[in-house]
View 1 (cartoon, one colour):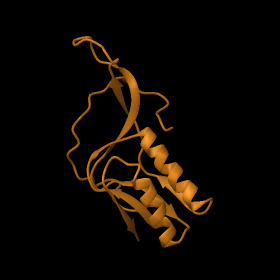
View 2 (cartoon, rainbow, N blue to C red):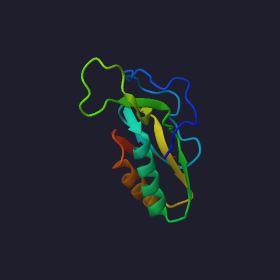
View 3 (tube, rainbow, N blue to C red):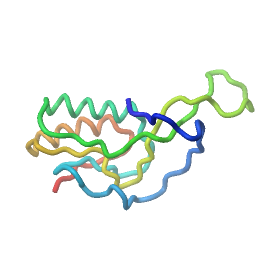
View 4 (cartoon, helix red, strand yellow):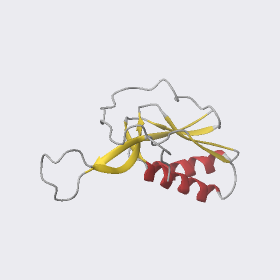
Amino acid sequence: MLMPKKVKYRRQFSPKIRAVTTRGATLSFGKYGLKSQEEGYITARQIEAGRRAITRFIARGGKLWIRIFPDRPKTKHAAEAPMGSGKGSLDHFVANVEAGRILFELDGIPLDTAKEALRLAAQKMSVKTKFIHK
């Protein structure tokens, strides 16, 4: 799964994401893309599950670009930890995703194949998405 090699601070605050993105909102590499329609967090596991769904469906054809990276650490307390015992330990990494951000891009395959592959990946994501093409 994707994760940073090194982070400056192991525990970060979790900001509220309430923005429509301007960066990463257009197709840059491929002809087809999966674009988020709402803001939220996407975990490294969800990105990996989407990548696997796409690569299995396109069956060694075309090229795939992942346009997001999970660089924000999320913490979690133990199951029965009492209140007031500080911040929990590192659990997983997430990517901040604003509305309008491109998540995946595809190229080198027919339109109907790309549409179905990105539909399979969209089912793995925790935000609403839509299929776009040039």
